[in-house]
Image (cartoon, rainbow over all chains, first blue to last red; front, top):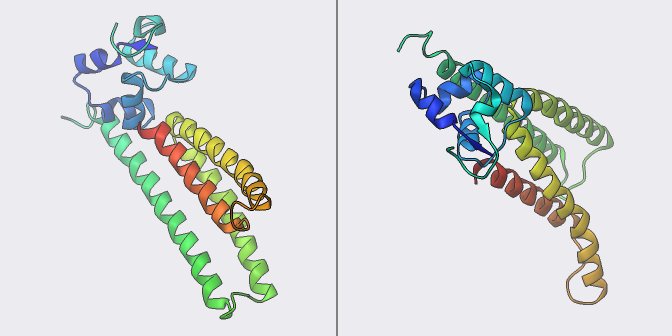
Length: 68
Length: 135
């Protein structure tokens, strides 16, 4: 799963720890999602979408790795 | 950066502190059980029936209670890592003994040693956890 998490986080000048704390997950979890090593659960994806005020499909795309 | 802007970093630091406190308590409890067993034991390794029952009860309660608290305090990446580690450890244990037993009966290796299999399965579980969590 590709995602725009790193870009969205950078736009808000948030560290991985800051985003993790706002989501209730660890910094390592944010890093694993950003690098495409871990796909978040649906509840966490909804949390992310709410936090960034976007739709899930605007953050996550099909495919391998990050970016997109 | 103000506290309002820093709210996630503060929450993450608190979560990390809780996590490592829990890890420290689990390690301390394991050490207490291990040392108590050693102190109460004879030079031949046996312990009294009362002490054996008390230590067994403490081990069961601390393992179940500790895991219940631990699983409520971790995030979904750590839960997924635990599942992978548990899966690897389970198969290491379920395959370890029969394989060793068959090879022993074939005369290839020494008689199976349950403690070695137990520790080995634990190490495989830790390897699986670390692989999922950090690689």
